[in-house]
Length: 148
Image 1 (cartoon, helix red, strand yellow):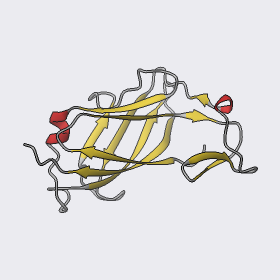
Image 2 (cartoon, rainbow, N blue to C red):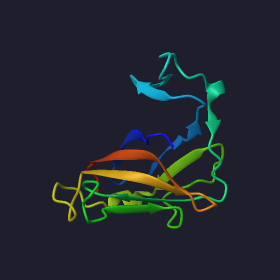
Image 3 (cartoon, rainbow, N blue to C red):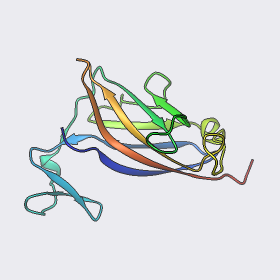
Image 4 (cartoon, rainbow, N blue to C red):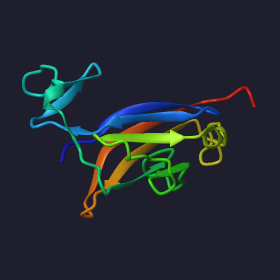
């Protein structure tokens, strides 16, 4: 298993949020350089033809946003069961659909867990055979809403 990718997302409080990524495997070691996936051995960009989308058929997923990885309080929970993680697009795509009501209810501020403006999360995918993968760690930032 490779190390989780690292992503950063901004939630605009009160607005619909629909972001996601495509989870793919590559048959050789890679790393990210200046935001681009490159072959770790040659430094050359990874061509699209080398990407194999991960099959998410029968998978479920879960993620908890916390102020810090070891913080006890969950700020926001996203799962396939609560509709905040969508694996249904196929071809390795994983989306995080949050409606405006959900983003508008985020208690903005800098005193977690009562209010928060930044969070960290780790996506866990539970495969049909019971194996669990952790493909990505996400840093979250909330941009506060002035129109209420």
